[in-house]
Amino acid sequence: IKTYAATTSATDSFSITGSTPTLTIGDAGAEDTKIVFDGNAQDYHIGLDDSADSLVIGKGSTLGTTSHIVTDENGHVTMPLQTAFLTHLNDTQDVNSTNTTEINFNTERFDTNADLASDGTFTAPVTGKYLFCGNYAYENPTSSHDRSMSRILTSNRDYTFAVDPHSSVDSNNTRHVMHVVIADMDANDTMTFNGHVSGSGQTVEIKDEGHFSGMLIG
Image 1 (tube, one colour):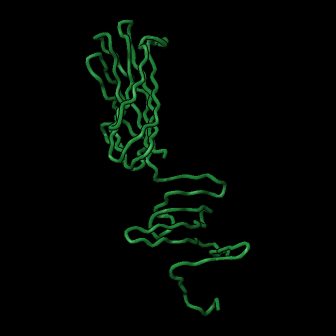
Image 2 (cartoon, helix red, strand yellow; image 1 turned 90 degrees about the horizontal axis):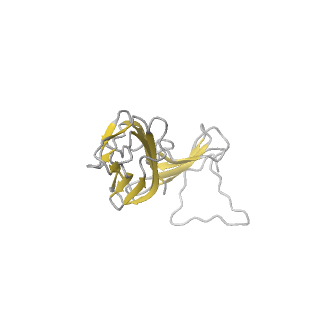
Image 3 (spheres, one colour; image 1 turned 60 degrees about the vertical axis):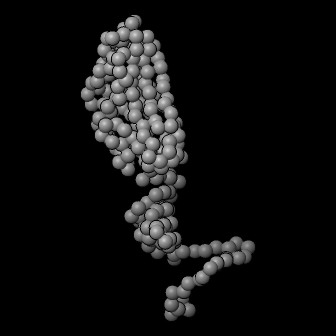
């Protein structure tokens, strides 16, 4: 029967019953195996990438071409297309008490789905929770500067971290600032990372170091 029967199909529902119901796909050969979900507008698949010994969930009917979730034989789970970016500063910028400056992290290391524009604006591709982490350093704050702020600005709300700018400076009169937040964003919301000082007209310089990163976490 196995040798001569043609491919068969089941309509509506299919049940496997018994004390230990099991469905086996494949015969231990060196070959990929998969289940394809044939949708109207979009297909998806789940299958074994035998060459990588990984279980893959992805888009389309071809195994391994557009992998969304991959788990290997040791239990590591990756999402190759999950939105994530990392960018860092490559030149200095001036900030003073008369303006709020968008910090231009102008050297991109990676941007998985091209959600980060060249001007530093991130656009959320889907509604969800996003983790943003930033740090930078500025030089020459004085006792006249009474506050500095780093601000992660999103369409839904702003997240502000304020510090005394002349406290905790290092031997080079440099103040380091870090800012981390999990922000709720709707699809097509935008986010920028800004810096601000107040209390003096003297300009402080953001050094050419620091980085900013973000990713969709759920």
